[in-house]
Image (cartoon, rainbow, N blue to C red; front, side):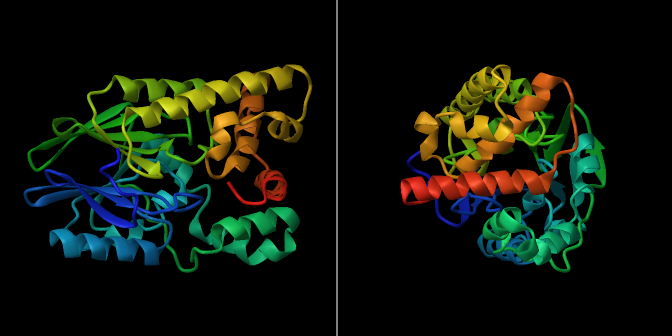
Length: 325
């Protein structure tokens, strides 16, 4: 995909389709998309705060003439705030998400993120890492606007004369993940089923669902893929994410069977070629979710503990390598 430069802002894919990219794709720096046909337009995801979302909508208007008030449909690919916290700026649109995503959105409202950031100095390693990865975003005064329509399985839409398919592939990254497919243009917006050049993070699982979603993408008639984070890609991006989870699943299982803790297993797994991806500390959450899966016991994760473990992993990696991957 060398023709697609990984630069901030709007990129025209062709035939009324666009991506909006947010380098460097790390924690919170997510991508979005726009589909336009006739007098109708569909936005794929908003961004992490109002400032970022306002900038995106202004850029889209300058390039296409479409004002935020003209957007007819908004798809939230999943519940995470970096794909939903800007919803209030396009509240006039029909906002669609999977039923599972809509239910999950209320679990971590913007006010909770703002509170975590305020408390971060008193939270040790967890707070230090949380502030490092989320300190650039402004959650104060952000109102989460929930979906106005939900679906399960698949939903077929029209944007002008274009067919758009919503395909639910979660739970995987989160409890409900949606692919947005424009078959006539062979373009796919994946949300966080694909992280390109960055380590994916499995908050929900099961891992088999994520691998199955990658296999589905590889079977689709698609040429251009806009991931949730990172540069635009093609089917190789899906294969890479599938191979990462296949590898981590195999390695985590060995260490689970050997009785290693989540933290020790995460530190012990050699990332090999995946060590070049950013945010390698997410192996901690991936191992945690896999351990839950192996044990058959699903508990609400202790986010403070997980962020402390990721912060420790990140600090060790930085000190050993002399730089952050």
